[in-house]
Amino acid sequence: MHLIVETLFTVILVLYYLIESIVWTFLPNSWRYKDVQNQTVLITGAGSGLGRLLAFRFAKLGCATVLWDIDSKGNAKTAAEIKQRYNSECLTYTVDLSSKESIYETANKVKEDIGEINILINNAGIVTGKKFMECQDALIEKTFQVNTSAHFWTTKAFLPRMLKLNHGHIVNIASAAGLTGVTGLADYCASKFAVVGFTESLSMELTSLEKTGVKTTVVCPYYIDTGMFKGVKTKFPEILPIVTPEHAVDRMMDGILSNKSEVWIPRSLYVLLSVKGLLPTKCQALLSQFFGISNCMDEFVGRE
Ligand SMILES: NC(=O)c1ccc[n+]([C@@H]2O[C@H](COP(=O)([O-])OP(=O)(O)OC[C@H]3O[C@@H](n4cnc5c(N)ncnc54)[C@H](O)[C@@H]3O)[C@@H](O)[C@H]2O)c1
Image 1: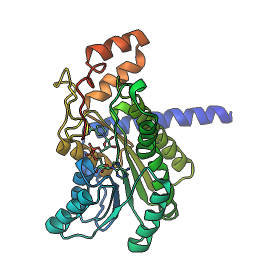
Image 2 (image 1 turned 180 degrees about the horizontal axis):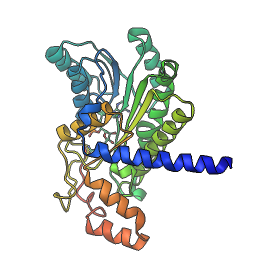
Image 3 (image 1 turned 90 degrees about the horizontal axis):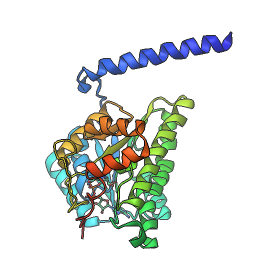
Image 4 (image 1 turned 60 degrees about the vertical axis):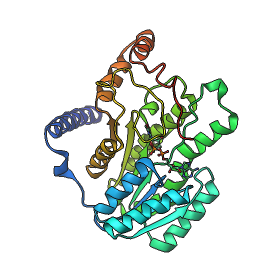
């Protein structure tokens, strides 16, 4: 009897959540944006690309920003622009995210300097862009340290306070390469699949701890024109465009402010990757070839 009641209850809730999600599809997300004014946002990899643009957006919304990067010059440039444009509080820290010690040490400094972090954005990332057997071991290790392990250490450093307050947000910038394999990106894909798994598991843990005030978002973009994937080609730009950094950051902000658990960019990924899951492996390989995923990295140059 107990199981029958539980099953009925689950079915009703599933239907309710389905209807809720369908209704939201037709309503502007901005209706459910949260107010982040006066919150403190920490962004890793804020010295260039998406990290810099995210820092500008949060500063514009009235947040204090804490910028982490190994590139102190790039980070200082982001901070100078924030102070000039928005006159808001902004602190910079030079930190090597491939070092756990450097992360914990810097996290302690941040806590002393500014106190709690309300929104943590794990954005910094690197790519080797070589075929698997050509990737040096040291580069594979570095990719995992920066793209994956760093997220564990930053989260361990700042989550306890969020749990105490039952308020906060952990945002992890993964990749579409964290949802499907790509030729020439074995180490990068594996590091980003791990980020997707980490965020999903963390979200489940928070739910089971009834810490529903602490949100998680994992962002999975296809290629973005920041320079990180310089040289990459897309076969069907109408379906899978290389998006502008501004568009990517618009979608990221929209997802973060409306507490979405996942943001895939561009939206065509929702269709393509859902279909992929239903197909036999041979069809998946064929479609990967057809959509150019198997050779999009052929002319990869990346950052110098
Ligand atoms: N650009 C794309 O096409 C694309 C696509 C999907 C996902 N992403 C992801 O988005 C995130 C941001 O990418 P981006 O395009 O802005 O890249 P980017 O190269 O412009 O910026 C990355 C930043 O991370 C910093 N960084 C690198 N190693 C570091 C380390 N050891 N310690 C501290 N900081 C370090 C760099 O100095 C740089 O400022 C990355 O996680 C990337 O994997 C990018």
